[in-house]
Length: 208
Image (cartoon, rainbow, N blue to C red; front, side, top):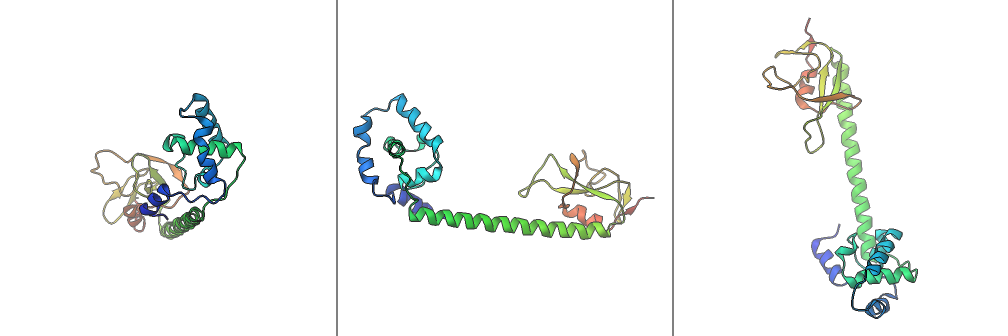
């Protein structure tokens, strides 16, 4: 992933990988004149709709920020001229490398998330298999942590743990003194993630 210093460097000194860049940039004022017309703005907007962000980055020789408002008038005109000439330049080597690194980073993150999800599901399946009562998983719809809403274990009948009684339809982690019950969604086919609920699920028995 690029550092801030690298991004600032390539912003000041673009690295286009096509030979027409210098001539094209020199023509921007001569072709369009000193003032920006509404027609020019419309054409620039149409150019961006016709191309990808990668294309715009390749034309500019640096990362395109995604909006004409975020680039200079010269850069906007450069994009228009490249479109008029039907240029399709390659990405600069540095941008290709950053892109590859970003893709690798995203794949690694996805693999970690999937591994963590498999671990959570395996743990839940083990707990549910050893649970003496019928339970289901419901998400808290009013609060979400860094990993999203917690999946709570909810018994379908009244149960009892070594600590206390747990009413049906309420999360096992909820205490009788709680002023208002958790707002839970519909049952889901997802692993329980509330640690307190999982702890109780290992020990609960039918209340009767």
